Image (cartoon, rainbow, N blue to C red; front, side):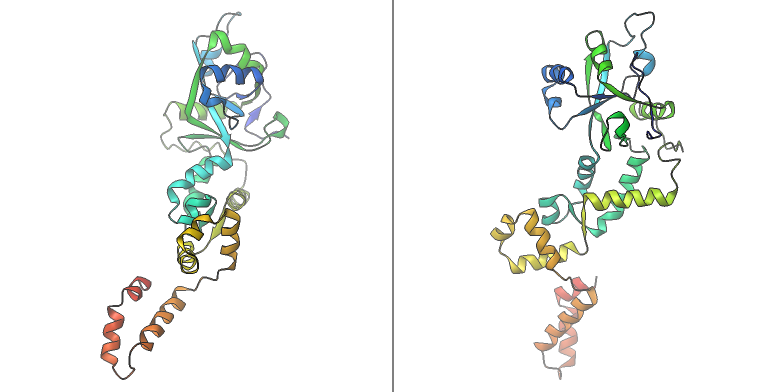
Amino acid sequence: MAHFTYNSPDALSLKQGDLIRRMDEVFRIISEIHPYFASESYNYFLLLTQSCDLQRRDGNKCKSRYITIAAVRSLQECLKREALPLLSTNIENKTGNILDEKNRSKLRDILEKLLNNNHPDYFYLHQSVEYGLTDSCVAFLRVSIALKAELHYDLLLNAKVLELKDEFKAKLGWLVGNLYSGLELRIGYHTVNKQVFNKMIQEILNSNFAWINNLKEIEKQLKDELNEEQLKNLTEEEIALKLKSFKVSTKKERVLKRLEEILQTNSVQNLDKIIFKIQNDPIFAELVK
């Protein structure tokens, strides 16, 4: 059964929200006009021009002189891009897919907006094997190019694989035109119950990222064990293995350990000095923030 977002593609005309696959001829044209978009990463394009401007009446040309299409990338690539501002440790920056658990809620919020098509920069396209879309993808609405309608209309029509239902075309039109103003037009996963939706979000997050608690603390321990050159040369696989072998102490355990270290360097009889030492110890102060 096809996903509720889509209609069977109309083979006679182009419409806003049509998904265009990268056929050889499409690839050749885009390579000549916009070489950057000829990358292997772009297997699909989403048509952004309004449907009314694409309609061909009585065999005449369509109203629009140009047809605008947006680059479509995998959901995984989109999530990695959105995760970049959250990366704060060397491990996160080196791997890109190992994240501190504290970042989960932030990325979850982004993903929820994405799946509901409430993100102003993207349009989410759920996988639909029936129409040849084998993986869930995302259209990057700000990354678009224009092709001449007179020359390329039929080419794009032949490469069309699916089209959106009317309500999703309307949502795409709002996003493209910067008209979406926060009104509750809930057309994303409106037929899916909350529990199923939440489970889907968790599965996507867990399949695309490895989540580690106290990653910053683990990185400190790694620096104690390895020198800077060794750390730099670790592969992603070696980092993953290292992380599995680390047991991160709780905050309470770290506080008690530091107290023990302070006490070992001071006489128990000199209580005032010990208290003064604890109060002014920078490591202890950092631990109890």
